[in-house]
Each structure stands twice: as structure tokens, then as C-alpha cells.
Amino acid sequence: MITVVGIGPGNLALLTQQARQAIACADVLVGGRRHLELFEAFEGETHLLTADIAALVAWLEGVQQQDVVLLASGDPMLFGIGKRLCCHFGRENIDVIPGVSAMQYLCAKAGVDMNDIWLTSSHGREVDYENLLRHNKVAMVTDRNNGPAQIARHLVAWGAGHRTMIIGENLSLENERIRRLPASVVTGDFDMNVVVILNE
Image (cartoon, rainbow, N blue to C red; front, side):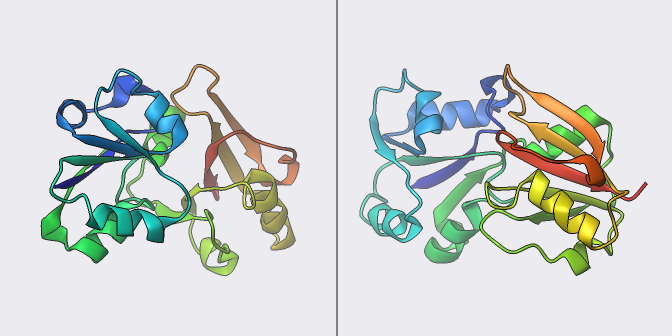
């Protein structure tokens, strides 16, 4: 059985009891290097997750008879690997254990309700700024190519430099930093982050 476990933004204190139990009972633990380092005490087999998702899927096809736990950042079904695996193997063959997403965490820390928020991602994709600007409240997963400075630059170009950006870096970790700035002043490099954009 393949179980996809959401491990939250990085602090193991946010891991659910169900997630802990699945990891403890696994034969094989799959994850990125940073994920596997969180579970150094795991005594079973480990498999390093790379950016080659097609190779991962092919490998998983051969180990389905074992209890395989795949560690996913945040929540696996929110711009995560959960959808891809459910589509490939069939929903009935994948067990997904949700986790706290970085978006949820940032909104909670910043006091932003999520009732009417538009969730999107710039991770590995182009941002649809025309659509983004139709929403007054946006939460976005970022990547190195489409991070806060690049997003801010586009917002300014679209005449939306007044919008507020809440930038959460290294969320839940010791070096966590949350900043609230107008898009017009956002520049520079940022550590691992997610962004909330508000039209206040």
C-alpha cells in the first residue's frame, strides 16, 4: 500500500498522530533529502525523492506490495504530489494523510482568514497575473524563479504595487520570518517561502 503523508511546513510538532503512526509502521520511507533527515531514527528502507516524478511512479509500481510512505511537504493535495499519484494509481490504491499546509500556517500566523482566499501556485509554472488581480486575497506557493521579488515586480507593472504582500520564510522553523510589505518595496532574495497578497 502507498501512503502519502503530509508532514506540514517542517516542524515535526505539527505532524498529526495518524502521520506519525503511518511513518512508524512503514517498510519504506520515501522523501526528499530534507524530509528524510527529519526521520533519521527510521529503521526501514529509505528512497530518495528527486525531481524525476516519472521515475518515482515507475519505482512505486514495483513496490506496492510493501507499506510505502511517501513524505510530502505541507498537504499532499494542495499543490502537492497527492493528485499525481491518485490519478496514476487510482484513488482506492492510495491513502492520503493530510498535513498542515504552509498557506494555512502563514494565514494563521498573520491573522488572515481563509474564507474567501484564492489558492494558487507559481511553483514550476507561469503566474496568471490577470486572473490573480481579480481576487482581493490570494495565497501562493512560490519557487526560486517566481518568488516574492519577481511577483512584486509583476504586480507593480500591472499597477498593483499598493497591494500588501505577506511573505512567510522558513515557516515553523527556528529561523522563521514573516514580513508584511507593500509590493512596491519588495526586493531581494528570500528563503523558502509562501506569499499572501491582499488588496486592502
